[in-house]
Amino acid sequence: MEIRAVKRLVGYGVAAVAVLGLAFAGWASFLRPVTVKVAQPARDVAVQVFGLGTVEARVSSKIGFKVAGVLIDLRADVGDRVDKGAVLARLDDREQQARVARTKAATQQTEATLQRALAGLEKAKANYVNAKNINERRQKLVQTSTTSVEAAETAKTAEEAALADVNLATGDVAVARASIGDAKAQLQQESATLDFHTLTAPFDAMVTARLKELGSALGIGEAVFTLIDPKTVWVLTYIDESKAGEIAVGQPAEIVLRSQPSRRIAGKVARIEPESDRVNEERRVAVAFDAIPENFNLGEQAEVYITTVRLPQASLVPEAAIIGLGKNRGTVWTVEDGALQQRVVTLSHRLLDGRFEITGGVPVGGAVVTELRSGMRVGRSATITDGRAK
Image 1 (cartoon, rainbow, N blue to C red):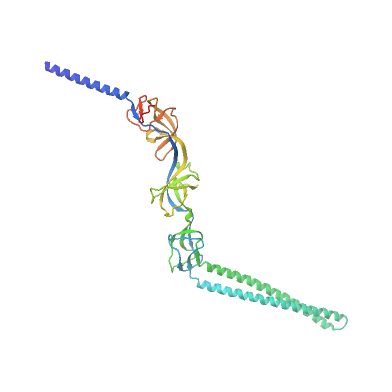
Image 2: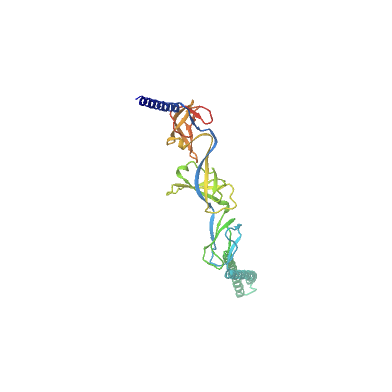
């Protein structure tokens, strides 16, 4: 009996010690300060909007001949850079050269006809002057009966006929001059058609596609090359409408090409298209390179980071540390006078890394906790990891 009593007493003692231990542990955990991390003031914070896009050229043209023909000469290929006016290709132009030669001969013939008409006019004028002088003398003589009336009338008729010849010669000169104008217009037209057999670059360009090869029979306007202006290369970016409201032309941007993931290329917003994609609910934004890369690939995927605003100083807290986030408001834990508190704060910009800018709701001297952990209760003592108690 005594042994059993002793064992019972020992059991009671162990149980009492366990209960006291648990009570002490609970008391210690309640009173012992919790260690937390808090947000530190950040300076010169870039608020950015992210978008995906592709490298494109604003000026892109498919060019071909204005006349039909057979392709006999190609002087450019994909990747070539050509100057404005450089010859890119030619069509067989022998038939057209013959037309030009024929119209040149016709022009020369009309010029000769004009010279002949001018000579005829001068002759007619001389005959008219002579006939007029003779008629004047005959009319004076008939008044003194020195010559017959018949001779005077004949002289008058000869003068009138000479005047008619002058008028006819004048008409011939006008016709010859009109023929020269028509012949020159025909020559200009045929010469222009001959020029159309040569294809030249309309601007300083880069060849991105050669669509035909030697010997191809081409129709009017059929494309032979695709050209782009390399100075107009940019990134056509798609931005979620919910993020695009603060974007403006001229804002700085950073471009990361898929082929160069470790390099950030400076750029700026060049154009914001007024029409959004109705299906994807995205806005198209064109971002130009500050300095276009020497080697670029049209259609290459690119990441774009547009800086919409820079904050001189900001208090930033991760989204995971905000309770009940919504409508630019949320609840955060703070350390005030060395103890934990909860505050409803106002929020503004959201950074790409998920942090929010706190713009109000934190009292002076308070620090916002950035990582939630177990055991956090209002009023519990708190120690900041760098050792500065608040």
